[in-house]
Amino acid sequence: MPGKIIIAGAGPTGIGAAHRLKESGYNNWIIHERHDYVGGLSASFKDSEGFTWDVGGHVLFSHYEKFDRMVDEALGSNYLEHLRESWINIFKSWVPYPFQNNLRYLPREILHECLTGLFRANLNSHRKADNFAQWALYTFGQGIYKYFMLPYNKKVWATDLEKMSKDWISERVSVIDFERVLKNVILERDDVSWGPNNKFRFPLNGGTGEIFRQIASRFKDHLHYNKDINWIDTESKKIGCCDGSSETYDVLISTIPLDQLIKRIKNKPDRIVKLAQKLTANSGLIIGIGFSRPDPSKKCWMYFPENRSPCYRVTYFSNYSPRNVPEINNNFSLMGEISYPKETQLPANKAIEKTLEGFIKTGLIAESDRDRVKSVYTIDIDYSYPVPTLDRDNALNTLHPWLESHNIYSRGRFGSWKYEIGNMDHSVMQGVEIVDRILKDKKETVISL
Image 1 (cartoon, rainbow, N blue to C red):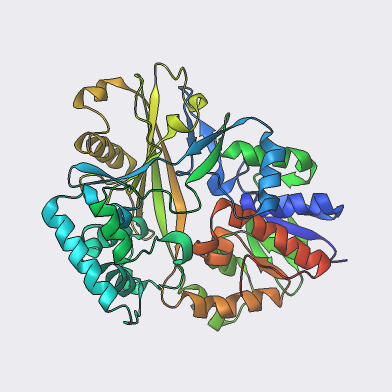
Image 2: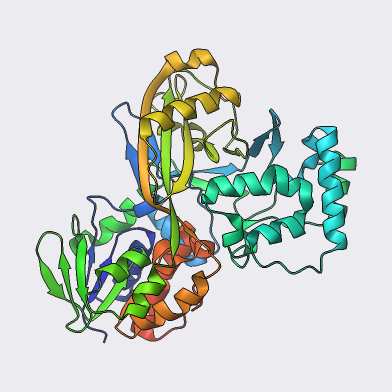
């Protein structure tokens, strides 16, 4: 048996690991959570006006039966099911998502430019890209790249696309051929069903965080709140927390951001320090605004590649569940997301005003709706997206084996530092699978190291 297992963090990965330990009948384990709530980046909060907010625009879809069963156990029948209605706001109009599948909505000259660029890209499909910027240009052509792929992704990542790898893409970006696009244009056909999240569930009560609150309630005796790990001694297998306490471990499952985990380790070689410094993340600001009027829109979420809005994405959060707002017949809510580089600051007051201006400029609200603002709620996310930079994999290929040689397993959105397996279901399953590896020597399938 592995001895005492400490889990650092009660986000999706930590909860997944804890659930699996409980399910396996193994009892020598605890979770240390630095906050006074569970859920991590999938937590939810209710503000003083009765509006519920998520930490970003989460939707519940899955690649894994195990995750589905966990959600079923947590929610029972207390969920809603939605067909995705997602749009791109561009050229003062709405284009169905994905953009590259629905070019027929564009102004004629822009449509011609996008079709011509895609046609030429298909003729030169043999070109090999060295980075994400080149991949997007070579795959979609100059028009789609210029009007959507470049500006939108710069907003999301707050990083130069030339510094990003192309290897993370997988199912994250819809890749289609010229013939399909042309057929959609000529036949005036919408092409909106692409992607794993075209159908999704959402909790009836409490936002996304309700899933993890319900799961965690089953092992609350193992869960320690306000316990932030301050240092780790790999030689003595000992951790120290910010409250002054310390304890030993045999195995440490960490969901702490990987670069921060390395900083906390006392006795590490310089090469490990230097590799951890190569990891790049961005920060994010969630701006939730509740309005005291109903809204007839059926949209789920919307993308904003242009600079008329500071947000890269806005969610009609009241459409996910009527209980996300007080009295759905009299209120609705919009939740905007803004990315910014970690080394910078984004003052919330200025961002709120720019977000409201963006809502007006893009037609989500009218100028008169400023007087109907009932609630404003912000969530500043220190670590929002792990950026898949060009040298990321080389760093991870050394960092993870070094940690595991000391019985430390770094998993989760920022523990693995792999955006492509950073969805909620991926993250939970990373926790499940690392426990199966530790207890039963099973191979992990979600993460590949």
